[in-house]
Length: 89
Image 1: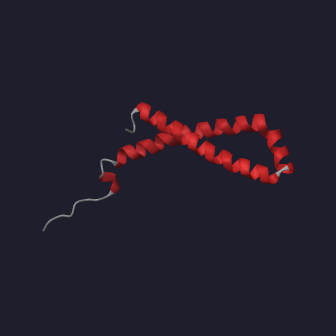
Image 2: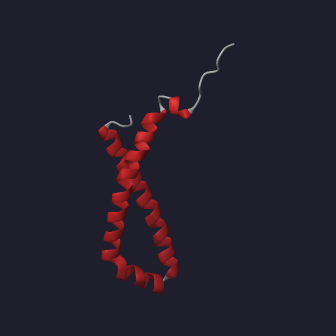
Image 3: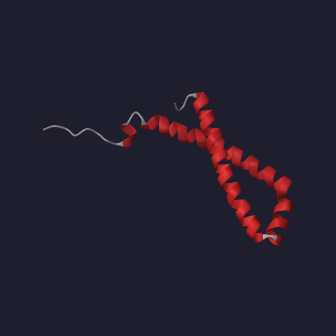
């Protein structure tokens, strides 16, 4: 009787670098997001409240653009760091 090969993800040698990469990205994301939020709240709180109460449509558009831009920049930055460290080719 022949045994079937174990196909669990934990036995896959390519799974470990992916987990390491994800863990490292989370370690980078948390402080960057926290610092960014605190800086924006400290510097732009009054401006954002004024735009929100005066021009809600412009605020909504600006918010969506900010979310997209932040996501792209944060992903590019963390990918760059991970490539420099050598966790991903």
